[in-house]
Length: 442
Image 1 (tube, one colour):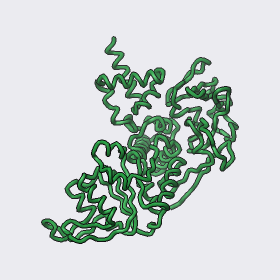
Image 2 (cartoon, rainbow, N blue to C red):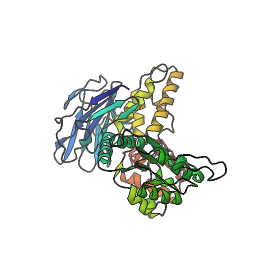
Image 3 (cartoon, rainbow, N blue to C red):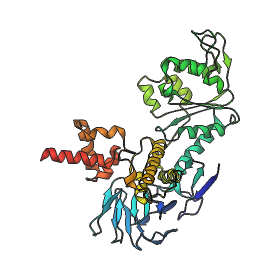
Image 4 (cartoon, helix red, strand yellow):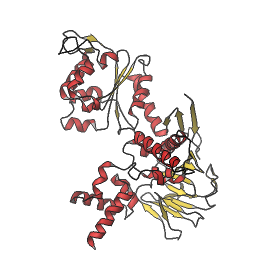
């Protein structure tokens, strides 16, 4: 596979330590191409601010002809973020919504906006540019590894040097198997097999047989069969969604790990196994223990050390490259429009990388079928990247749901996009709910 790397541009020298969080902007897309540049906000009184414009900004050169010389200003006073257009030729938008050009028109919110657009350039405000300073974006085939994910991979490799277990916390589709493979290749068992098992996909009635194997005659039609644990002997066993295993299977797994012995179904004698165990779940394992759904003794055996994978929505530099990658693989390849990238950066993507790849490919195919010169936001499914849990707001929300929505709107001072993001829904869902409420009052 071809591997390429892109170094992040920064106003700090490579290797310089970031001792305190420094808010700033990430330039992730400009003039039709993915990029990654770091722009820390400069100190300004009690806060920080930065003016965006064409030409040299900090150590970055912004060559987008659609960006005015003085285009927009982004500020953070320690409490609220503010974005203001400076009378630009092509305007400024925040989270896909255009802001006015008058001096009193601005976007303001307690949390950083998802994306600021100036011309054909997209900036992602972040509370701390530290993880991105002097970092790299790595491409290995279809795999994109940004600075945040790279940190987790490094943690996994370090854990492999010092121990034989690793627990991974992360949402579905966020890259748990990638981290598990880094744990495998980072340790002494890297030459052995890597066996990945999705516990959520194993029917409960055959989980024990699949994990521990069976002896011929153990049940009607049974033949001698090795289980996943024996197959992983000398290597690494990765149990994804481990919390889905039943209590009896958890108990037998704990015994196998402690005795390093696997007893197949129907057997009286066990087989010695040496393996490293990497486990993962999208659930909080401590909460599962408290709820009585996961054995406490097994948790202490597999729950540490632990790493947590940031969801894709917190890895914007990967989102941009994943979109471009899918568009390049359709026939014929099609350019990516700024509006598509902007829209994808705003959305929540509860299915993470897996969902984004599917939806970006579908959008590219739709654009090709329509004979469009590029794939734009209009080619993306309206439901793509929206939280499935937020769907009830389009119907009749109950009192608790209404209170939650109204609290989010108050916190964000009526900013619909920021409130929708905090609620884990698409902004159009929230707008429809608001319109329905307004109609009921009238």
